[in-house]
Image 1 (tube, rainbow over the protein chains, first blue to last red):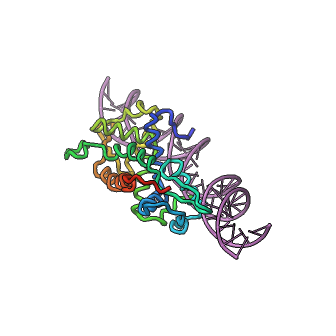
Image 2: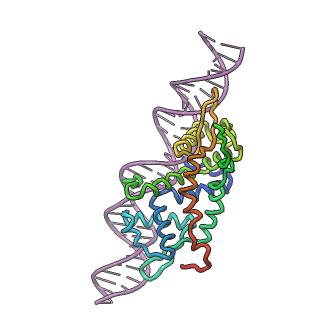
Image 3: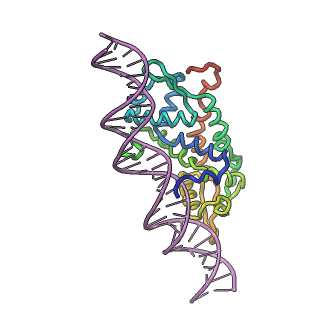
Length: 112
Length: 112
DNA sequence: CTAATCTATCGTAAAAATACGATCTTATGA
DNA sequence: TCATAAGATCGTATTTTTACGATAGATTAG
């Protein structure tokens, strides 16, 4: 009795939560920022840059890949990672509106 | 050896992760959507609507409050919750740019 | 072929998140 | 005053996340 009760929620809500969860760790934020600012595929010097163990970084990369936010391909011994455009657009389409959302933010009146 | 190593990351990155974590559960997504669409303070009929135990809902509300995304005030026996505008703007300012970000998304070329 | 290198995966320990019943607190209404 | 109702908090069980050492797989260099 402690697993997330996904069956109570819409698939959209579950999807949004899943994507948010992918962003819910500073190491994964850092990885994504790095991939974005590099604006290209980078082969993981991430381990050194992040200061986490290699296994841990690999685990975070896997999480991001499973969330569809990044993609990796093999180049010799190394792996190249970059933003997965399709997945990122899904992120924009699902969480974007929620975050940008509340029109009530633009009004001055506060309700509470 | 399993707590998030926040000291390795910038306070910005930690803040972003913290906010994403607040969104990283379908129940909390549902609560926020409800508060937004109600466009007002609602006193928790959330328990009934969500199908979760009262204690669980209260816990999720607490998480959202601690993340600064909602605020609650007392009205008799009941509590009124609504979006915390200030906190929401912080959300927009921290996660918004990241999500909207990658200009490379607009280019057609794929790197991997 | 062999050693070295890069990275994924396995196993595991510790911590955090999730869920809920039970209880406590506070305010309302009789 | 006292019973009732709303909702927070406590205690606790279960699951998931985080982290890392060790190991396995695959490729390159010599």
